Length: 128
Image 1 (cartoon, rainbow, N blue to C red):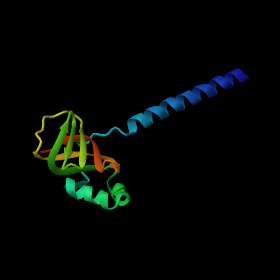
Image 2: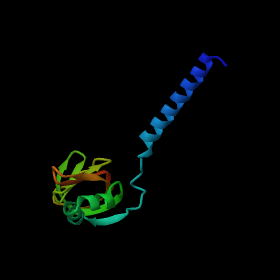
Image 3: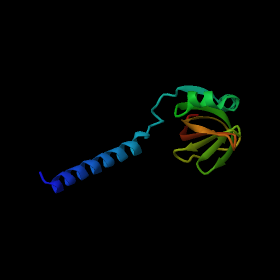
Image 4: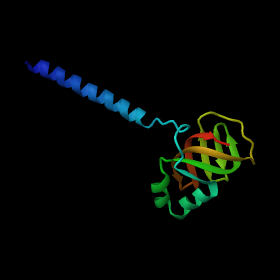
């Protein structure tokens, strides 16, 4: 086989690996939180207390896990609901929720923001 043929085969292999690798990385995080079972059920104040007391331990315990959190709605901006002024939940679908309501949110923990002192969740939905 000529050098040009080997080069073309090598190039095709590299492009194929890159394409499939990119697709794997971009779709591997897609989860259906609605059908997943919650690994933890807690209140907004309890989970926030765990993060503020020891961020490293709480992060290892909750990061990227599906949780159900109950609390009082203290702020609503577009599709982001804040529970007990400490847990920020980005809803998958915007829903009208009144400030002061007691609700239960199911979502994925994405991390703790030290600067804002706020726990972040995404892919959230209102359970009750």
